[in-house]
Length: 380
Ligand SMILES: [Zn+2]
Ligand SMILES: [Zn+2]
Ligand SMILES: [Zn+2]
Image (cartoon, rainbow, N blue to C red):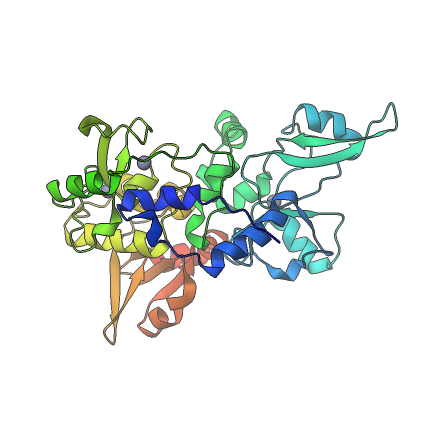
């Protein structure tokens, strides 16, 4: 079998680092994604192709073998016409993106109707049903809305604490693409985007970006963090999006975190380790001498934003970023913490045992949200 693989996303991702594209080796991960991903784009049947127990919801969002997935019922019944005309209509099925009560319930009773597991970020989902007038089967693709329980338990964009028009707006403006990016730290890779236009970096790009970074002393032009110890974390961004326009006013040296947070950069993957490292540098370099929620939300991993909005609304003391705890000369990086109360929030829970050994209370962001009473007692 011949596999045709589109590496333009990878090329785009390495280009800002200034390293030649030929340096790249194809990992098992990438080829793995091609197989699993191809199936997940079309949708796999829950209980038949995929077992519910293989979908991990412990971090709040849904993880299948390292890939972010959603669950939905493609069969719209007699509402197929409504669903095709307006996927966000109240009578159209919703897409689950988190471990909400619907999933909890399915796990408990071990039974469920026909659900599909899908991983698609373009917001279009295959649906079918019966036209009530003609009694004929109809099918197509539509822009189904996200499940509101899912938005609530993640407090996504502050959904839980919002009311009225604000709340409706969060639902209406929900983008699966942005959502996947917001929670990308929990996953090894983002789904490749097959439709975006190919990039067109100039042949001297490595040199141009290298020179600019050196000229700026490896400093991010947005947050001011200096990355000379780890220059790969400093990217060079094209302000107007045109990759062949290397005029100085179109270029901006940005740390990976500031770069990822630019508009239309949903496909720039920055690992949790890199985000943690950048915040440690920022802290060492006194960028965090003033801690308020505005500051913290700007620099924290986007996956923690729902929790931060809730903490701010509940007037919890401000958390800190960029702290690492020394355990026998091994540094344990913490995503978010309240050092006096010794409370830590982690994205990658692997180091939670070590932190607990050092006297810390450790929560995942999802645990903190779902057991907020326990969490806020620990923090106050
Ligand atoms: Zn849901
Ligand atoms: Zn920056
Ligand atoms: Zn950019």
